[in-house]
Length: 235
Ligand code: ATP
Image (cartoon, rainbow, N blue to C red):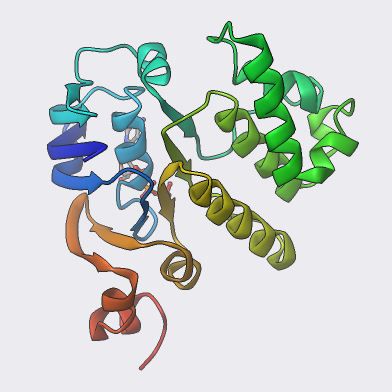
């Protein structure tokens, strides 16, 4: 396994946000975490990237992450594209992208990765000198994903990449995420849009009230009556 999460728990004071969550991501796999608002999806991704303290075990390529600070987790090959994007709105697109490579010293490879991001999202090359605050929400999401890719992840954590984005750009973003996977990067994506998640992911975990309810292949969950009723609006 690339990532193994076992009995992960997080509490904010007395409020339990995650309880005994276990989950795996294989190399190159695309895994989605589905769940309603407040289910704990963002908390799960933050715990994996060590932005949020947790109990339980987290191992990546067989090595424990639990003792590492967040920046060291990036160095191990896990990059987090957070909810709300967390960009620097007054910096240019190019500066925001390059911030994703701040730990790297392999300049030639960084340039090659920037070209790769531009191939994935050509609009970012056209708008490279523009400040991010002038871009649409969908384009800002592309910058956030591109910045995470500039860290050369083996595992990309994506927190609700389609939220608040116009339908056409949403399709473009999911298509780009599939291409990132096809190039060899594993994906763990939190998503509320069940239809999109089941279309693009290989496997899905359903998180409800901080616990994993169902999990299975997208085909299995897409055919599951509970999922169809609760998440796909099929009676
Ligand atoms: P959303 O789609 O709304 O982001 P989510 O599934 O990502 O939801 P989380 O943001 O992980 O859920 O939140 C899980 C629970 O923990 C919620 O009840 C939320 O109110 C609570 N919570 C999240 N962050 C904090 C915090 N910093 N302090 C206190 N409670 C928090």
